[in-house]
Structures are given as C-alpha cells and as structure tokens.
Length: 265
Image (cartoon, rainbow, N blue to C red; front, top):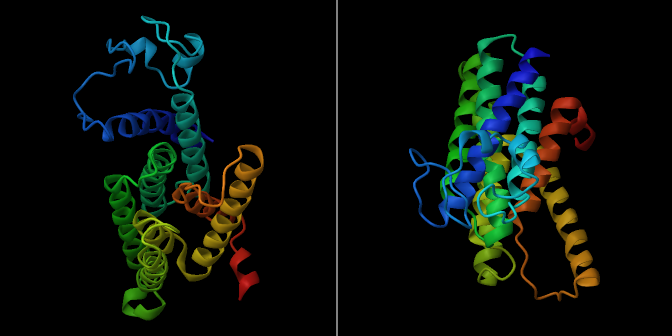
C-alpha cells in the first residue's frame, strides 16, 4: 500500500509538470527554472496556490489575483496522471530492482502520453518531444526486460526487443501509409509515431487489440459529435487520443489479466 501511495503522490507532482509542458510547448517558454504564472494576468503563482488539485479546490477554480477561471485541464490532468502512477505502482509492486525500474520508466512513459493526449485534443498536433521520450523509454524497457530474463542469449527472435520493435514498425507503416495516401486527411503523420509507442509497449497481439479499441471508440465519438454537435463526416478530429486510450486500456487489462491475449491466439 505504501508504494501505491508514493506513486500516487509522485503522479500528482508529475501531473502538475505535465500541465506545464502542455501549456508552454506551444509558446516556446522554458520548462525549467521559471516560476508558474497565471495565463490570464501573468502574475507569478505562490507555492501555496500551486499544490496539485488541492489548490484548485481551495481557490474554487479561480486565480487568486485576477479571479479569472482556471481551466479544468489542470486538476483533471493531475488526477489522471496520479491514478495511472498508482496503478503502475500496484502492478509493479517492488519485489526486485527490475520491477521498480519498470514502474518508474512506465510512469514516465504514460506521463508523456498524457501530454500527447491533451495537446492533440487542444491543438490537433502531436508534440514530438514528448512522443520521442515515450518511444525511447519503451525501447529501454524492452531491452532491460530481455536482459533481466536472459533471453538474448537464448532466442533473440522471441525477445520483447525484436517482437515489440517489429510490431512498432508494422503499426508505424500502416498509419504512415494512411497519412501519405490521404495527404493527412484520414490520419496525421504524428499518429504514426503514436503507433510506434503502442507497438513497443504491447507487442503484436496487444497492439492489434489496442488499435481496434482506438478505432471503435473514435468511430463512436465521431458519430456522437455528428448527432449532438452537428459535425459532418469531413470534420477533423484528433485520432491520437483514441490510440492512447486504447493503449492504456490494454496496458491495464494485460496487467490485471495476464492470460487475456491468449484468447486471441
């Protein structure tokens, strides 16, 4: 239980930093060594008003200085990242150095993917710095996992590094092809890089199921927008968030039900 609480607290902290990345990436502001400020009145925010989730509640969702509303993005992102961190802490309860390292690396991966999710929803664009960080960490996780079980010296073709990298290549090629053929009207090139992360994380079957979840949820949301908001079939909606949602679902299912993917074999 202690490790779960610690991961939850760290999740709140990194969720707060994820908000900084989301808000400052587009404006090219420095991510480090600069004080947080209100986006409306630009006044620096005191530490007591910068406590994840709690400060938002105490301030009733308004800036202390200008009384303008604070976006719900901030507490929602902080809460989501903290919950994901707590789940990862639960899945990788510290029993060895390997499990702790995997927990830390996966936490950073999902914090990066949350940044990609929210940024794509807001700006219809994949922030590649966050995407490359997630991809690099996933590649490291696969190598470390294979080294830990010693499979490199037995059968490289059955290793996570090979199978997950192959899945990433196939997924990337599929989405890149859709983007190229449609001149990015069906899919953006950035989604192809999200597909790399899915392949590296979930492997062949998990990647396929995650993509199916993403396509199905995306279709449902698209139809709902047409019915409720009066959108049309030509209205562009970001697809990266649906891919990331499918990835998170499969990650959770695989850890809660290790034999789940055997149902598809």
